[in-house]
Length: 146
Image (cartoon, rainbow, N blue to C red):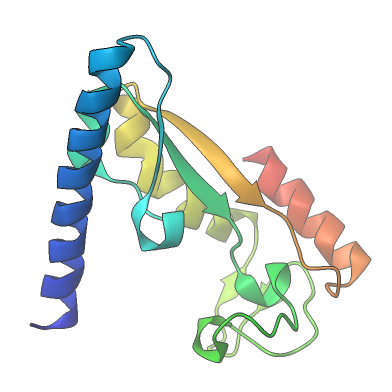
């Protein structure tokens, strides 16, 4: 099974499990507020559960070169750059990360859910304490503006 097929399988299985859980919760408490994580470590929306009356939760950690600067628990292949981060920043591929990029990464993928009336929650967000303070504040200002 190639990676794309495997990811599709995981999403289908996730939707199946969430639907079963929501059904069980609604049997006990029909009005209960339920928050479901997105897929891909909570970073991608799940359209397959958009009609369940849930809140979908995401993360606010991009780019990881800023949010997780020097964090040794993050796999190295998830970092866009290993340079001391600035904001805006250019990653190792020459791509610019700024407020416009954050909009494309954070807001645009969730727009179809929002158009369907699904509420979106940012469940985790911030920077590791090794990120330079001025960089953290500039990144946070752009993130919060979205």
